[in-house]
Amino acid sequence: ITAIAWKWVGEDTPVQCLLLGETEPGAMLQAFVAEWNMADLVTGHFCRAFDAPLVQGALTEFGLPALGDKWMSDTKLDLLRRHGLSGSMENLAAMLGLEHQKVTMNQSKWRAANRLTPDGLAFVRERVVGDVLTHIEMRAKLLALGYLRPARVWKSKSGIPMNEGYTP
Image 1: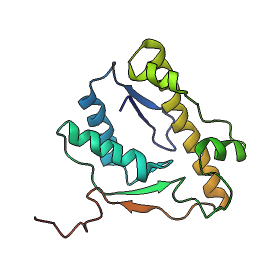
Image 2: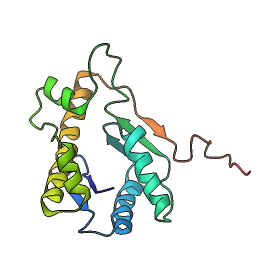
Image 3: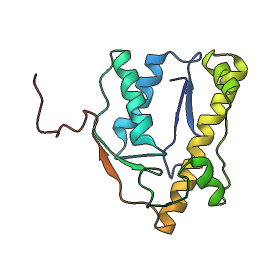
Image 4: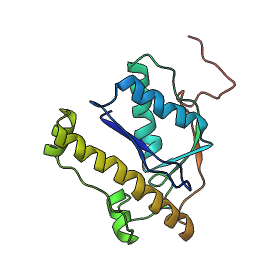
């Protein structure tokens, strides 16, 4: 994880953003998990299928405790069925006429970010902060239009019911 960002919806606070190269990976993950643990509901765009599993993998890599199960509202996976309409954040933000738009990064910018160059870190900061702001605005609009299905619980332990443990 090169960068991680989050914000509490409804609070007049800036987006929190931590970057590799400025913050140690374990500290980045622990800061994010502390916020995750306080939340009743986590929202994101493709967060159940990409972001949460990616964070879970990083936690495993660094020997940190796993994420707990969490109610999640995913503006891609919970979007009503839509034949012929892309569910990408970029497309939805443009279609909905949002103030915030997806910040795009080409391969060259991602390489610079992953190499932790000053320009690359500036690019990735803009990207993840922009993703958070775009998502918050997009989710509010999708909810107002009735386009999102209800939130679902993301199971951190591969769908094993919380009251049943698996022992090999």
